[in-house]
Image 1 (cartoon, rainbow, N blue to C red):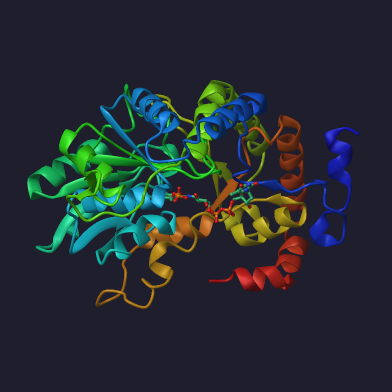
Image 2 (image 1 turned 180 degrees about the vertical axis):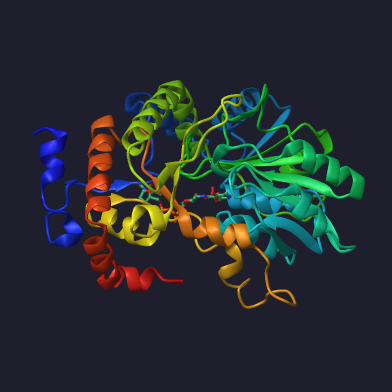
Length: 410
Ligand code: T4K
């Protein structure tokens, strides 16, 4: 059946059958060569070396550091713990400025250790923290800025560094989305005092669960490693407060396997991005976020914005219609951390002033990509979106009546 014939079936939200027989997820993991992974796991089992800085973790760290062009990599059990340990290793306390338009782990990693996240607004086009607005939030209690390379797009690193230096505060980057991305010729990894990657299953390069702190600062790297292993400096010798943040050998084996397929996955993401660009181009009111050709990009997130007036239905109604088709588009990072607990219940005097975060949070829709998604899937999705727009009034009404839509309301 041709894509156009498939797309002509009745829309699922209007009573038809879903056009996609299996769910298409944002974040379905990329899986590397199975045989190679099983071999690696076999060796781990044979040698009985399962954790505590084993050979797979050490090799993974070397490969991450080389790719990010940075001196040190300390692998961790996940990105959130890496953020927590990074903030501690930097001595962050009091208040830290952070964008509200990010995955909630960025803010939680601070709040979890008694640091107050002070939410900053974003640039409405790039979705990245606005440096001028960040500077305006600095108070005597501010110890740092935690910026995010959202969607793999580098944050305004130079402006932020200049502000941090001028105010004598630390600068840390949440680079969870940005492994393999660059700011011009410089790879993400060596900016600020330290950066944090996530290698969660849903990420471009995954180790099932995993993360890392990367830095060019010898002392910070030493401290982060110490903190990730209870503060042990030798057998029975503890020299600092620490937790268990270590990556295990099985995760590292998955990570090493991912490295071997990384270029292939990058090519798939690029191909899919081109296919999405083509599929969305004719659609009114749906625009794909542009990527900056001067930077390297992993194209892990396909991010678009829905302009309700032009499209004839809003982002939430469109997401509902797509989900009915088994195309599980996401509303990342709606409604913004400031509207999630515990932050929602503790606004500053006068409330949060984040107009761009609010606006972008209402418009952004993230679409599936990665090796589980074919160009044919994308072409069908494009045709379906065209049909949804053509039947916008009926679709909007059906979406409003849907029970999951009611649940999804903030
Ligand atoms: N900072 C930022 C900016 C981040 O985006 C993240 C994580 C972090 C920090 C923290 O890093 P980690 O501690 O996670 O290493 C997901 C991920 O869980 C999270 O890692 C990620 N960001 C965030 C953007 O997305 P959910 O709740 O949206 O994921 P979930 O479980 O709905 O997964 C997405 C879809 O992927 C699922 O619907 C099904 C599919 N999937 C998922 C997994 C885990 C699979 O097919 N197989 C799988 O194994 O948060």
